[in-house]
Length: 173
Ligand SMILES: CC(C)(COP(=O)(O)OP(=O)(O)OC[C@H]1O[C@@H](n2cnc3c(N)ncnc32)[C@H](O)[C@@H]1OP(=O)(O)O)[C@@H](O)C(=O)NCCC(=O)NCCS
View 1 (tube, rainbow, N blue to C red):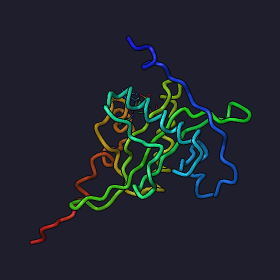
View 2: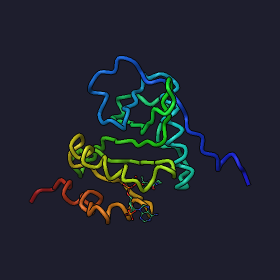
View 3: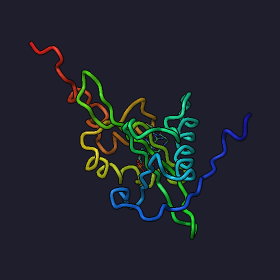
View 4: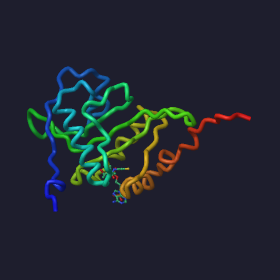
């Protein structure tokens, strides 16, 4: 058994100074940009890595070198337990999807929280914020059991299954 694969080490980073207000989207969230310092982007990468490991995917759905032209917004959940440094304990990525047969839309590509931070209503609490900021966004599949449960509990089936509503009739009669 590869013990390293099971370790969860929460990364720390210095809170970036002089943040413009548009980057402070939500009190628990920090929007990580592609020109941010390495510790911030590494923290984001670490969250994506834990998501990949836990859900058994074969690639990491965030790159530290990703260009902003790949329209995406990466967010860290963070804590300020340490006096100087912040500690990241979760993250998620929203991606702008453009297809020929669907209206362009944002998708919640992945989200991961440290197990000790789960089931405290954190994800539920940011859904209205995501709706406000990203409009008619989609929670992209495949869904984990936890996300399936959350969608059911919050009656968000419309958010996951609303591809129908985004369909464009490309062959109008
Ligand atoms: C999915 C995830 C982000 C949810 O975040 P969270 O902040 O813990 O969710 P909330 O506290 O807002 O909501 C908890 C609700 O989710 C559902 N839920 C959580 N874990 C569940 C599980 N294992 N099985 C079924 N439903 C589950 C329940 O409805 C729960 O409410 P309850 O405690 O009253 O039963 C978190 O569990 C996580 O990081 N999981 C690992 C990665 C993952 O699955 N990502 C989603 C990929 S689609």
